Image (cartoon, rainbow, N blue to C red; front, side):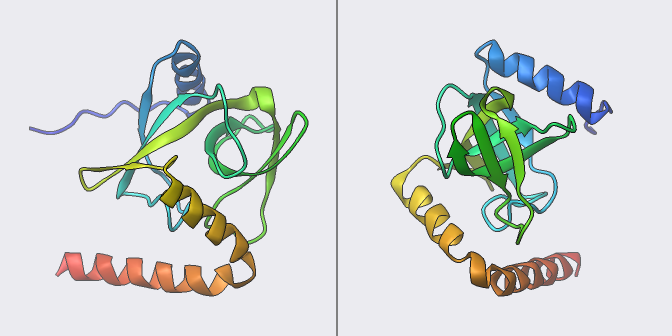
Length: 157
């Protein structure tokens, strides 16, 4: 039995997700894209979001950018009402939004049936360490992406 798919444009989809989060519901989404490598990987991970009542530097949030594009990125810096976001898999690109544009915060990652609490001290430590490794992140991401391609080729055999 196959899985039926419903295609929505991103804006309509994320507006609905935002409304669900504001109503106090948890939302589970399949990861898309590689901007959060190595912590969140496309085709492997699912994220569980909750309403963004509180978040801090290091939190992973779903935010609406001024261009009306939604991103799931890590909070890099907070200055008053302004939030700087950066994907773990990005080398330079940062986005800016306002506190009120943060729709939800990731509380769990589901990976191969295992639940990872990203608010745990070990996960927060790894995220802080990754942030400090920004000067050498290019090389670490190269190895990570090479390993992912290798795994995909091995699975196809």
